[in-house]
Length: 196
View 1 (cartoon, rainbow, N blue to C red):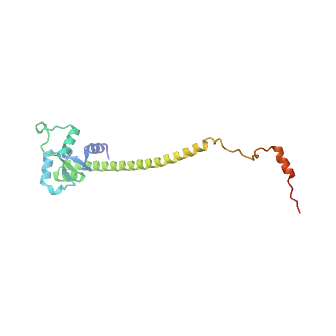
View 2 (cartoon, helix red, strand yellow; view 1 turned 45 degrees about the vertical axis):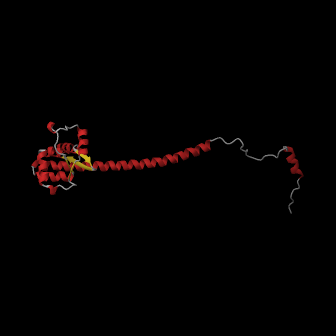
View 3 (spheres, rainbow, N blue to C red; view 1 turned 90 degrees about the horizontal axis):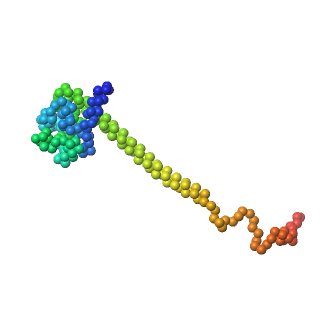
């Protein structure tokens, strides 16, 4: 793909929005890309209703339109360039269908870039989902490792703790009240076992 095609694809991609969990492009943006007026685009939609089922095209609600207007700071008054009707949102398939009903050379050429932009966006979203999945997996591993490390640190602390003061020494202890000499005398008086 040459540089101008990449630039056009990015330009089209910047006009794609996510509404109702679908990637769409508004009729004003699509008309601009296809080089026709919004009025002409909407005429073709009204003339060919069978070509635009609900998964190809839907009309924005007043709340959606108000939300978009506030995001893009567009005029609200019809006398100052605002819209009289709620805008249409085209899905990827609806944008391609619009190019076919408009039947203009520019619409056909631009529909290729529209499709590329939708595909690029789909790939980017898929990549983001993979990244989120990997991050979640790493987070779970870290949680497990944190618990293991805490157990290890606790075991090391227990090993490094000083021994209790009541610890007995290693070796033989003499009974209380006896001395070294008395034990040797006791050993001398004890009869030795004879060998036969």
